[in-house]
Amino acid sequence: MSAHDDAEERLAPVVPLFGGVAPEKPEPESDAADDWHTTWRGAERPATPVRALDDPAVRFVEAGEGEPDHGDADVDDPEVDARQAEQRLVASLARRGLSVREAGERLRRDGCPRDEADDIIARLVEIGALDDDRLAEQLVHAAVSRKGQGRRAIAQSLAKRQVSREAIDLAIADLPDDDAERALEFARSKARTLVRYDEQTALRRLTGQLGRRGFGGHAAMSAARQALDEARGGARGVRFE
Image (cartoon, rainbow, N blue to C red; front, side, top):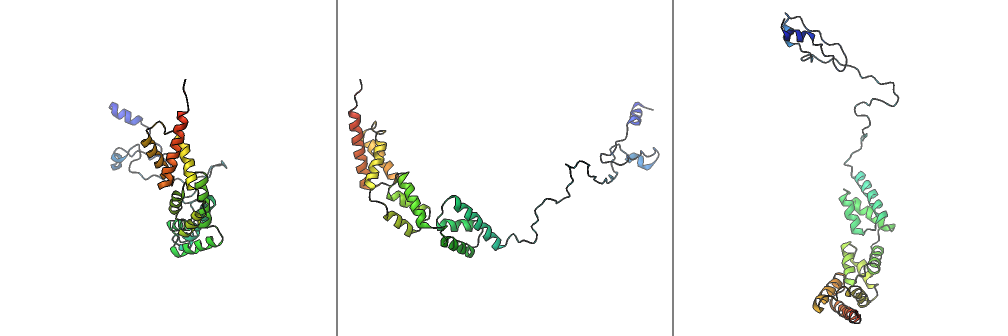
């Protein structure tokens, strides 16, 4: 017997991982001897039943257990889509005001049919959850008190939020006619940082800032000139030793 044959005789057959009895090696003279292999090649793995452990913290889950059961619900049901879209819209309104057009667009983006969306909007308008006039008042108050914006910028902001034209006109009409005063107040807050530039550069920069705030034309130019004159006069009055 060669060393190779001796080593092969000492190899133990591999026991299947999932239980069962390892097949015996066929007799050398049989036809099956050439096909026998310690990895059980060619043999069918015996089925071993899964047994639950005694540990109460462990359980076996059958395939499919725990998956959501949709039952007979039609995922493409327009009524279901409309109801879900309305719920999401109401949740959004609790966090942030929306115009009527913004709300309608949101419903349609969420898959709500147009007829259903119109009905939902009508109900929300009726109960006061959607109100372009009130939204316009809130936006105008924020624009004036926190941003110091002029009429033109306020009107542009309201249009961007798709507030109705009637609500915009009403909100702008209620604004006090003090654009000149607010433009000068804003210009004074910026002028001292611009006096280091020559007169034309400082004037151009300040009127540009006023324009972006919604103050244009004569009001912006007048406010910029007055604010820069005041700032330069104050700077000339400072003496350095």
